[in-house]
Image (tube, rainbow, N blue to C red):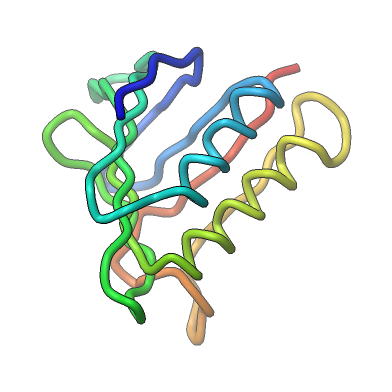
Length: 129
């Protein structure tokens, strides 16, 4: 699946990643996470910042896999078990619907994190004002 969106993505491979979009675009991203399969699904994005990003690539992997968020080959790659991708999707939906425009959430690893791998890039999900 290849889909073009108006999501913007900023990546600093040594620091973090940020995905920003309208409430509708963020809901589409959440649906992509929920519907992930073992075949990579790709959403074309608008790159902002110094590091070029052409797409968000999502793939479901083994049953117990923690989510890994990483940058490679000009894509922000998100991989993990179905259940964990569902939790991530719920967080993205929350960012799309909660608070006021311009709101954002941080998804970062901490000890005992329930679904995010320790090596993952911290992720910021922001809703356009």
